[in-house]
Image: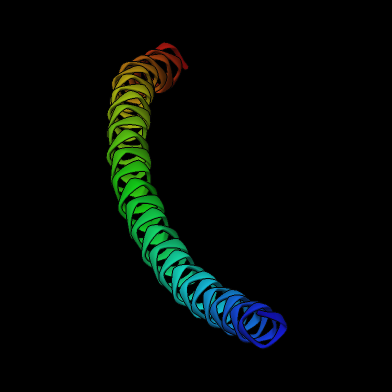
Length: 104
């Protein structure tokens, strides 16, 4: 009976050891899977962030192009107005010179 009890305890210890080893192996495998999934999630987040950055840059470039067009149009309008004013003054100056020459 004592021998059976010792054998039973030995079997129980072996089963416990096997269970611990199996649990450790399973934990190691789960950890590896979790790390792999974390890497995949990180890469996916990185790709999404890059896509958002590209989209935001495209929008910013589009807005900048619009502002540039508006600024150029305003500048062109201002230049045209200045040219008209200069032509008007040139005609006035020419008339003034003609009047002075004629009146001498």
